[in-house]
Image (cartoon, rainbow, N blue to C red; front, side, top):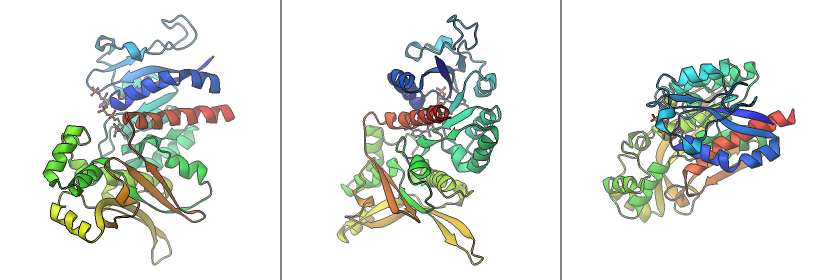
Length: 354
Ligand SMILES: NC(=O)c1ccc[n+]([C@@H]2O[C@H](COP(=O)([O-])OP(=O)(O)OC[C@H]3O[C@@H](n4cnc5c(N)ncnc54)[C@H](OP(=O)(O)O)[C@@H]3O)[C@@H](O)[C@H]2O)c1
């Protein structure tokens, strides 16, 4: 049976959840595509990496890659000398999956990982939005030149098919506006404040429930939402902006009094992201993106997005507005893992269709 060999660059929450999901869906993949998925490389930041025996003389004694037994991994299997670039350059994989932590201000080193693997003619999947927010157009063009696929469904709203909706379901539609609530941490804090908490108490409660990180500044200051909006605009509107181009205001200045005042007017305050193409004097289109605390009617869609729910709406020329909603799900990390798995399945489906 043919194989699809996968290298995981980053093996934290998402990497582990994806590895578990791959085991769960292995039979489905083999039956559907006649192809066995195997993880042939794993890389971490602190422990180094693992490369499985992946050549015909491999330890499993077959012409196939053995694959790493992710259910029984131990620290002593990791080689500290194997960093991300050593693994990417090994070439012992068909698909490189980028799962390192995001650097919202630079997109690095993820962008360099993606660039290196694409240059080697490998398919690339990323859940890290850095490369899409900083270098989408270049990486997309490089993938086309190399005849490989570059997919990123998990970068915004986890596994909810946002890019896929535009690419496949709304084929032929031009997207002129994208909007929504993209950041769960700030939505959780605002929801807690509506229930009467102060900003500080809402952050503390979020930390206790695991929704809010030890340092939530990237979320609270709107940077995470700005990076997601940038990623969506770059892909869905074919523009070339970075998170620095977004007009961004976070929620740190929102007070309990403002929330109460909004409620008295039948409104709520939500951190709304919005990206549009506006026509300039020369008739050309300019991308304009904003992330801002916004007053919304209590019965409106954004207002009913409580805690960790989120949504994306797109405005199209042929279909008008179309909205997708991500509802809370346990375990939440499986949403992201599914986003990565769905990209693997897309690569297999495209190969199958040829
Ligand atoms: N968690 C989510 O719900 C979610 C949702 C959507 C998208 N994402 C994105 O998915 C990516 C992974 O998220 P996560 O939650 O799995 O993060 P995580 O738990 O922090 O795991 C990150 C992994 O990357 C490794 N790493 C760090 N620097 C590296 C480097 N230079 N080279 C190779 N490996 C490196 C880390 O190594 P150590 O093990 O040594 O620390 C760890 O294994 C992030 O970009 C995140 O923004 C996450």
